Image (cartoon, rainbow, N blue to C red):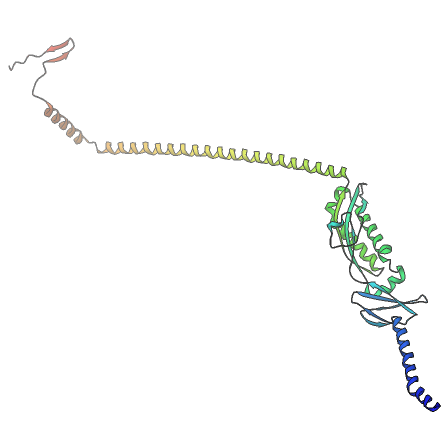
Length: 315
């Protein structure tokens, strides 16, 4: 009987016991989560419970950690946006926003700035970022430097010069932040100064200035228009005078030509009148007079003393 029991223990109980122990061990191990699955947008920092941080960074894949000894912390390496504005509804694609930036110009005028800054973490050095500031890199490093840089470069210009130098301010801020963030293993991607606003008094002065400039431009336009119209009238008068002069010249020339034609005609006529022509014309006139005579003599003729009767002796 004892032999049977011992044989049963060796063949059945012991394997089951070993399997149970293995199952318990596997359960305990997996309950401690030794495997870590990392997505493409994540990087994980490994540190021990004894205080040291591993410099190697876990990239996307399945990784193993030592339970109860190693801990891991996720670091988001996607592009992150920081919005500074008092009107977040104007930027519906950005979920998180902070109050707009308040700065001052070089002539001590209040300036209110809406800005968007995008950045990301250096994927190869997230462990150094974690060692330095833990997970508070945005509040301890990024945001304070953004605020300080924008205020510094805005204050270099007078309030009346800020709008015309917007691009210069943006370029200076980007250059400064790129260098400073790089030393903190942070990559600056983009800076956008979306809006500048000013106090009511300055905006009123700008509006008044714009109105004055518009009136000045309108007056200048009117003066130019009047001058152009005057020039057009002068040109028109000159053209009309020139037309009158040309007409008079043509009429003068026409008269000269007409007179010269008459003179030439008379000259030709004179050349054609000879003594023979004159004698012929005399005979022609005498013959015409004879043809017109009715063969009656006049009864009177005029003398110095009046009319004198003529006596017809042929009757």
